[in-house]
Length: 295
Ligand code: BDR
Ligand code: CA
Image (cartoon, rainbow, N blue to C red; front, side, top):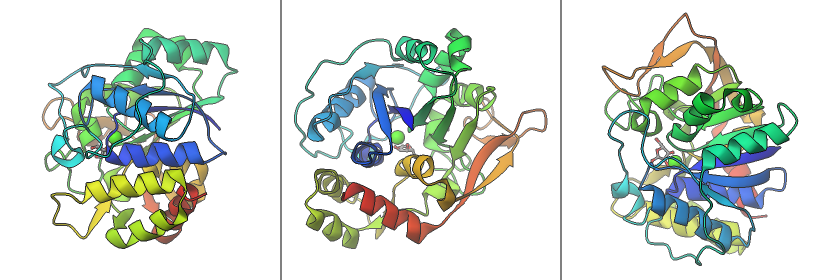
């Protein structure tokens, strides 16, 4: 599967990217960065550092510095002041390139229709700009798989909203209303893929670069947290791309509230259905992720 990873690393983004790079069934073309967990300069640099840590020669394109709507947010309290919990990685091998949205548009125009999928781990600002500014290219997408939203679960950006959708509610609404196949993985599922300190040993013992680096991020994820386990939200996107049978998908008609509770998913019968992952085989998903990181 040919993919672009759109991301704001971020500890769980970092684990997701390592998994994608270790997994030969994903043909990663590039990483596009966006402001989210932390500012754009840092998410871009973090993407470059992750590629360097894996010895991957892929371009990083800088995307949106601010959301289409709302003041933006950050999650430095969870991901650390550098976005990667202080884990030291090699410097990026090359400088980032500008204009993530223009890059996606060019790539889509050059590729056969329906052959490129975006794995979206962050606020959807870049994808909404692509839909607005390059609608013909956007329509050529094979699909978007995005971590975001919450259906029944309590939010993590206020009681009703999830961080990625709350960070740019208008962008999320544009993408959910677009006429390409969209699959979202809300907190209802991503909170079920949890990692404990006990998992760290297995990852470290594999000795593989993706696994040992992921262990360092997961270790950092526990700093300052009283919780016994932590959710791995963003790796669920890669898991679904590679192993759709791990998930139970429902079709729902939804919009994203941009006004009263920004980022909240709201049923809307006028919308075309999107695919929403509502169930996951937790044990198999966890073992698939650990095996993917450890290969
Ligand atoms: C999402 O918000 C970010 O903090 C994580 O990286 C993930 O993409 C979870 O709500
Ligand atoms: Ca993220």
